[in-house]
Image (cartoon, rainbow over all chains, first blue to last red; front, side, top):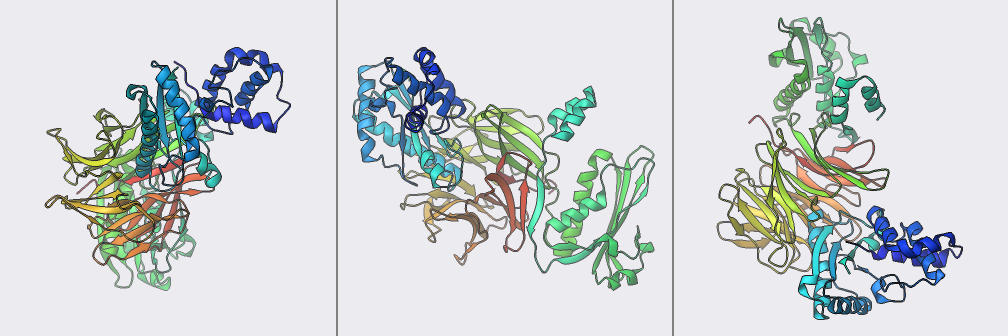
Length: 188
Length: 435
């Protein structure tokens, strides 16, 4: 059972643009081990911007011209698997609707694929209210994906409230990355 | 940590205590009151072969000082050091203008325990206010006895029951070297001593709550990858899953009679408040609204619940009354009011009050509707009253770390409770144990 997170892909894109000297030495091994790298990085850091090392491996693979899965190709909407929200809001931003449509279509054409929608909140306010808010965000994403063709049994939701921040820190630069829903593929 | 290592080096027997040993909360008073009443606590006389490890007079002095109601006369100012009323020259203490004096002594008993005698004296009247001998106390109970003495002194001098013998429950989170998190649920004495881990998990632990008799706790654990409510006996550590519905199982709150637990469940589509009867296991739905309804808290008479709801667009506090099943809105000030709980007399609520940039602890007077903000930091949360209603304990952020803090209900005294490393959060002040 594999899990992939967007955070690392984002980190990969950042490191690609910010660091053009991504070591080529990682290219060869990255081809076979990219998912593993993504998985372990996500478990330990799980955050955009903190998984730069693992992300570099992914971007290195891109440069090597190895075939990218749709989940890794930064040009493919399936590579985006974190949706961000405004404070105390569960309104899915209009500019990510296409992303959710792409995921829903992927699920529709891959009936065995499963996605867990993990809702999160920033640390402001009370903890249990934030669990409610995280769930509402996950449900909002769930609803859109269901309407776009994802099967009900393919989607599950869980809310972590503010208990699992993607980014440490106590200001908006961290908070905006923590108000999120992560699409975690558990089978694909 | 250094001490921990030393204990391990000392050998096998101490290794066992080394494992259960846990970094204690340290408490510092960050703001005191001008009107704190002076009191002198004289070091207790020792008529012992083996002195007890705990300094009873020092513990009593610390307790009284921490309440914010008392200021200790420095020992260097003492003219004499009596151990019982008959030895006291009241004129020595009148010179220091201190109204009250505590003296005492500890005697070893034939069975190896200790008799602890203390007297609380009125300096200006030259008389005894209170005096007890606590007989045959074992060395391991010495701290508890010191807190009992503090409780008696505090109650006689303030008219309010002392809460020095109570305990605190909190969640501690540490980041391990591999960057993963270790979440622990800890029970400690209210002065931070004797911390005991009652649960550790790599997944989040939330919303710890005491049973009214202080024997059991309820909490939310994500150990199976989703939130479930557990009930655990403190002494035995035995526990069971109380609620494991689809979606949210959260915010457990014991009824004052200990027979029911209110909670938040979202299996019906969105978070609503329910009450579970523990004996019959029957569940009653309290709220039925498309909004987030959560964080139930019982009134002390058990006749109503307050809860957080954003049914009006923003989170505010609402009250549900069991008799008529009606819900009324209680807060109107500010953009965000959440996680309310009652004062022990049921007349006030403490809650988180804020807007987007500031979340502070406030007290709402239910009769007048007046809201008083007690704190001035940015990220305060999880407030609850001390069982005697004198203080509110809460969690806040200080220099990028989660710490606990306490503030007197008039806002005059502030304390900070922190551990050496890691974050502490979600304090729950336990009930009086000897009612």
